[in-house]
Length: 270
Image (cartoon, rainbow, N blue to C red; front, side):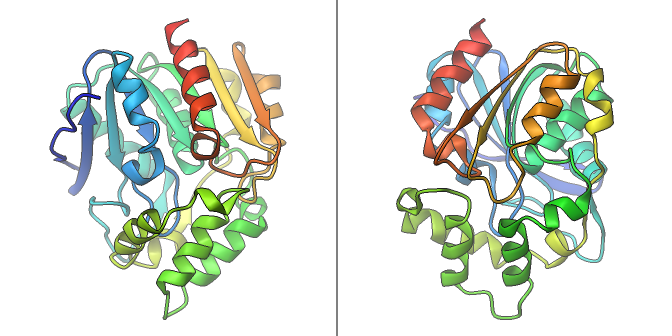
């Protein structure tokens, strides 16, 4: 794998946005989901090498409120805030077009960015993308209900962190102590507003406006985003295909790493 570049920071909307890069070639931007301790690298560290080795410039941003990026308090964390600051940071990094790879909230950000900036997203790879249901639907999902309740309690512990990350997968044996520790270190720096004041719209009525090829993945044991959402893309989008996996949770790219890398790279080459 190409040597991991030093993380760089771009000021976007008055906030620092951290982006880690590896490899060179056409840009592929991996956009992480939400949750306590989330970051670009902790979501996608098992996928980076395969894409860099295949000849792509892999960018791993930490969205506002996450990872090593700014974490302001006292604001609403809206989809526009996530999308606009990330797009500005990518533009400063010299990215004029890219494949956007988004998981959960990151999938919603990828869709919003593609809608806001026609021609920027050449293809979309989406893993259980969010922002295609009304907000109450998501907060009623068992994984999100547990996540918000535990994280907003005053004494969020490393054991709570392990339990929450384990909820992202069907088989908790894939969750390592190192991953838990990495995410807990970030979670301790996050204000409660990151989750308590998240505001995302339902983009389902606009999915038909996405002209680019779309590849999607969904675990049928997902406790965060209902797998029925795949049908929304298949019904509305002109060029979409989705793969579903039994006995897989919210993190297809973690639980089925080799398959995800294989199918996604074939899609990019195609």
